[in-house]
Length: 257
Image (cartoon, rainbow, N blue to C red; front, side):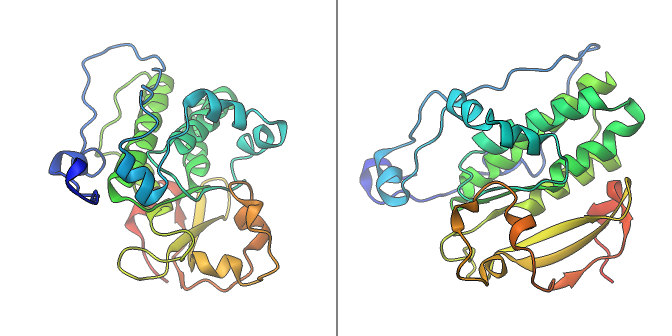
């Protein structure tokens, strides 16, 4: 950040990178309970960022009120219904959607079925964020929620060496991407790509990769479809890459056909 000295850059420190890429979730607790997420106190980081990017964060109470709509609540309980946050910020909406979805999974699953259901819940949540520093924090916020729910349900620490940890980490990194929503491209000038995770059965998945721009091939499509069921409504294009069918806990291995 350059503060008042000029246009603010989205520089990322090694500490910020570690929030998602190599964060260790270590605790000495012997009993786990769901923890309240810490809400950012400020709605803006700086006037420069507001002027340059229109960046204003949504308070938690407003996020919860918007998600309380009956039609949205119905989709939260449908683990394969898709949500897209086109301007993710630090993940206020993404974090709350994951939390509410996993709360539903907690209540509707046994310990033996919780892991695949939790991964299905993640696989249909997508986000795009322009600024890399926000992107890292949004991914980390989602992973924190996953860790929190897993440890509360299983009553044990989640090791980063487990398939579930690796799969959840991979899905979040794949579904929450850097890019300019309006231009359909990322910082490298490449088209934003998303993956559709097709359920083969309750525990197996096939991944297909396609461009975000392809969702809007029909110019008459209403872009206000927004966060709810965008992929279900518009997914009609051919995938650019296909992966082999695998167990949902093995998606991080990513084997192409």
